[in-house]
Length: 343
Image 1: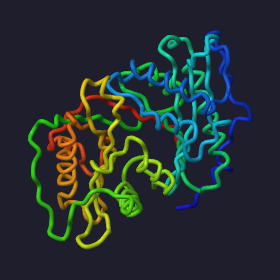
Image 2: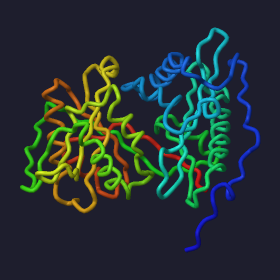
Image 3: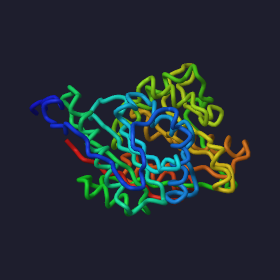
Image 4: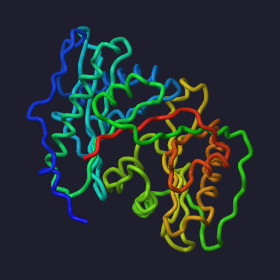
């Protein structure tokens, strides 16, 4: 197979980005950390319509402004009403590493008060152009894509993406489990033990994650910086996170990592854990490590007084994760759609 040319030669980026101008927006400019509170308010106002049972935690909104690889002065745009409220936001987020593909994710938020007026179309045009500019600076000889995500119920956002040239590539199901239901006690091999995630196991777990997800759609290796931000974040719960190690070693071969966003309690009416990641390194698959780890994570969540556990899964997972989670008592609720433009 012939090697691709560097992205810098294959992609022609726009010299100027599309303008975002609308009568409802008195000011449009790059965002700064000083805009964080306004951006959080905008995010939660939009989420109250798009997915009313959960809200993005503060640290995830912060990542839109200062995450790895983001230069907010060129990678973000925020629009304010005359009264100072944030009504629109757009950004790009390059993936923190590129092994098999260079990936850039677009984000767009429009306040419900001004939806249906063309602002979302302008935001995505700007973000698509900025993502293309970013890709045109890259020297990797790899495929590339620009991606966006939208809840299946937000048909207007999906339509805007399709009109901008994105195509639907994947569906991700949110699944939920009642922790009051019976949790199975599952045995594992004598050569394996399940232990609590600790900082000392952080790097070994990152390496296990990268191996486990290497054949998953859209997954690229997690960089040390991104992994540390995740595992030291405010909502991450190491006490509810468990890993399987080869007995007598610190060699991680499987993991179930959980977080708890206490801000969701009021929205949901109950406390819940979110299982961020479940994985088994490829040469240890088929040994029932994942269900044993999930069961242990569920027991810990229940002991902590949580009522439910949730997770997200690719509907076309190569490991058959959907069937596994259904067998563990999870049922599907919401659906998220992934759309991409490939280069």
